[in-house]
Amino acid sequence: MMFTPRVTQKIAFGVLLAASLVVLLPVGVVVFVILKNGLGAISWEFLTEMPRSGMREGGILPAIVGTFCLVTGALLFALPLGLFAAIYLSEYAGDNRLNRVIRLAIVNLAGVPSVVFGLFGLALFVNFFRFGASILSGSLTLGVMILPVIITSSREALESVPKSFREVSLSLGATRLQTIKHAVLPHALPGILTGTILGVGRAAGETAPILFTVAAFYLPKLPTSLFDQAMALPYHLYVLSTQVPNVEAKIRYGTALVLLAIVLLMNLTAIAIRSYFRSRKKW
Amino acid sequence: MEPVIVTKNLNLYYGHFQALKDVCLSIGERRVTSIIGPSGCGKSTLLRVFNRMNDLVEGAGVTGEVLLDGEDIYRPETDLLRLRKKVGMVFQRPNPFPISVFENIVFGLRIHHLYRRNKEMLHGIAQESLEAVLLWDELKDKLGRLATHLSLEQQQRLCIARLLAVKPEVLLMDEPCSALDPLSTGRIEELMQELKKNYTIVIVTHNMQQAGRVSDETGFMLLGELVEFGPTERIFTAPGDKRTEEYITGRWG
Ligand SMILES: Nc1ncnc2c1ncn2[C@@H]1O[C@H](COP(=O)(O)OP(=O)(O)OP(=O)(O)O)[C@@H](O)[C@H]1O
Ligand SMILES: [Mg+2]
Image 1 (cartoon, rainbow over the protein chains, first blue to last red):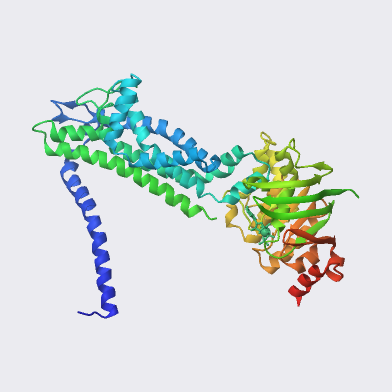
Image 2: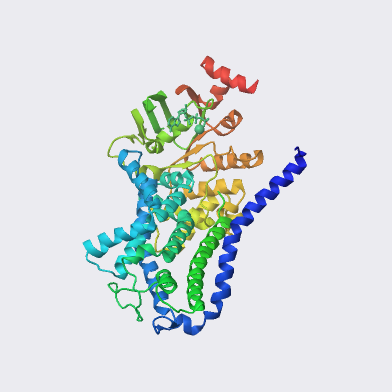
């Protein structure tokens, strides 16, 4: 059977459109189902109270606080380290064997399954450094996990700063370090922030890395030190869905909704930062 | 009159490729010296010798002497940062930072930690520098504007102002007008005549009329060699080398 080019064109368009709709479908369904079932659970009480009666009633405050602590800890650890590494790799490192190995390692680190990070955190932070199952161990584990994301996006951001900025700065008598600080970093910052937030959003939603390193099954109190265990939203959701019998659906979906909202909010922030600076930058 | 820059048997290598061959020249104080020659002959390379920007190229090596005010700038103990403060550079494409006009001008001052606490001084120098490039009247109310939103000519003037703020002695200009239209080019050329009163200027240009208009001395380069160097008048009317004559007449005819 033969079609005219016009018809072929229309069919192709239809197929492509269908493909994008299919991609959109699961996102839409997930959001719809979670909203439909979870919205009813959201209340001031749900967000600010301790769980009660074996997590079948009450709120999810400790899980929210726990996730917040873990994410902040991961950020404090991974952002400086990742940024320094990115600066070294893109501004200082030549093309020698050591640097090639480092770059390769980073690419590979990004592909490691998150459960492996969990085991790594258990071995290194919990057992070897004797931090125990604690917010510290969990944060560090999540930090290591998002390190490659931060390094890679920071490197891209640094390398997208035009070479001419560096040349001008050096030609005015600046040192390499001053050039990085004054002529490169400020212009790479939006990209670095975007990547960092996306990484952190990923950390907020992961269960496997915190499973062995920090997460408490049921701990109806807020953490008071870095060495406390803590509840966290993704793990709490897992527990509610599989380990505790007779939990009302709306509590499960409400928890999922809160987690989804946090991650979505971070991604939207990242997008907002990016588009704001993209509209300003012109070089 | 003592020359500001003198090179003696200057050779420059990019790895195994020799980009400058036995260049000997001397550049007078408060004069405009232009370097002309076909693409790839080493004009930019020569210019970047004078502020040692070639150091950034991996594998670049220099032999011979380059004297600035009588001192060899390629001695190991040369203070690179001071050298570059003294010998500034204007680039082919206007390249202001995407920050405000004011912050662009004082960029160098901030780098050198000058007038950190003294806002008035900072402002005074910004004004002086903008006045020197005849941009003050246009921009005095727009110091907070994003520099990248200015016209290309304004941007190039701003880049010159940014350079003047650190008080250099020598201005190196690498085809500073090649991104500008003829009218803007003309005005930048006028500016160069103005700047010549206080600064020594070396300009690389593809445009021989421009070299003729703005410069006191002209050097003609070919394949890394400085074929001829002398008063602009003479180079253009009575070139001593056949290759110079061919280049000049070829382009004009
Ligand atoms: N970083 C570099 N590494 C290796 N070779 C280089 C480098 N920069 C320039 N060259 C070579 O050196 C020679 C001179 O280059 P240069 O840029 O100085 O020429 P130019 O006269 O300024 O040319 P144009 O008029 O096109 O700007 C060219 O053959 C060029 O290929
Ligand atoms: Mg050039």
